[in-house]
Image 1 (tube, rainbow, N blue to C red):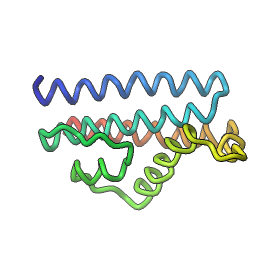
Image 2 (image 1 turned 135 degrees about the vertical axis):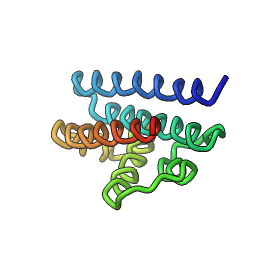
Image 3 (image 1 turned 180 degrees about the vertical axis):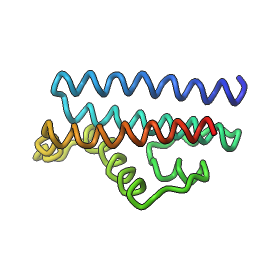
Length: 130
C-alpha cells in the first residue's frame, strides 16, 4: 500500500467515526459521542503522520504524541483541546466509580466539544492535503 493509500485509509476511517459520533449525539449517548470524536481526531492525526513522514503511525491514543510524530505546530488553544479530547477516550471507556464523566456530558457540554472537534477535524484534514 502506498503512503497516499495509507493516509486515505485513516481519513476514510475517521469520517466513518465522525458519522458515528454525530449519530450517538442525536441518540443522546453523549459520553460515547465524545469518545468517537476522539477516535476521529486520532485517525486524522494518523493520516497526517503517514502523509508527512511516510512512516506507520504509532499505535497510541495519545493525540499530542501523534502531533509530535507528525511535526505539527499547534496553537495553545488547539493543544488544550487535544488534551481534553484525549481524556474523553479514557473517561468514556473506564468510568470512575461515581460516573462523574457521564454526568458531566450534558447536551450542551457535548455539543460544544463536538463543534470544536469538528473544526479541528477540518483543519487537520487540510494539513494532510497540504
